[in-house]
Length: 350
Image 1 (cartoon, rainbow, N blue to C red):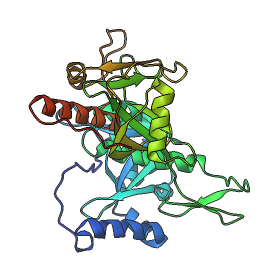
Image 2: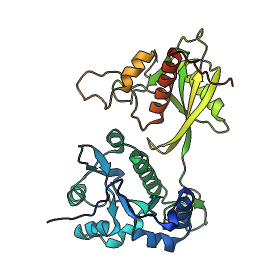
Image 3: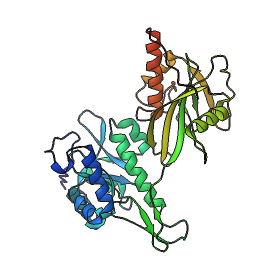
Image 4: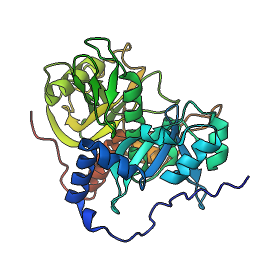
């Protein structure tokens, strides 16, 4: 049976909308959909949909042999549901995740109740674990599907009120849930995590946990304790995990990170004294931690994909979508600039 799904190709040029001509208007449009159930239902009819199966995103191969998330129109999703014996109204269970520049609302829908192979055949794609998908996607696609997965997971784990034990119900956009008994409103949350790349001026410090893929090292990271500020959490984590005292720190950037649950990653660079670089690794936290030279880091940044199982495990770093990768690349760029004659920058003192 032919299944002519109208899958929307990324980058397709559509006529601009007066309602969504810029960033501010798009953000206000998304906010209106969160507040107005009727407007959100209307947006479902012309929106783009990202399908998940038990939190695994649906990916398609592109003409270059790479992968991209499948974006389906509402009618296509409804047709798939109908052909597989599901009610077309299931699209109303979708969760709003954003808006395109062409004023099309973007939704995610988990079809985990359907047979995975049947949905894959209908859509001519594959549901792939998000950890693996992060190595296969490019550009803004990885953060988009990560957001979708995080919201779907939150809804699946927040069906009952933590205060009363009674069921919660969601609004149409899926931006909140309300207890049917007490009226308590719940919103999706993220746990703050500090992630830091430590340097002694010439080398950077990376560690690995036993759960990491073979050969992969990353920046140090840890959850912020209740009542801590960013700098306090950073200094504590570095002291606990590797026994070093941070003398200066600078903020780099932040990122939502979906593993293992939704975290708000606060990325920083930190400096330690070149005279005090002896590591005292807490083996209950880390399997290993080492200092790496610029040459070693430059080589690791060239590794485009994790090594295959059974083969040798070279030193490599997290994928480019990860904030750890950004921190490592920033440090390497700074070191190259310093060697080329520029003055090396040290984070300001605490």
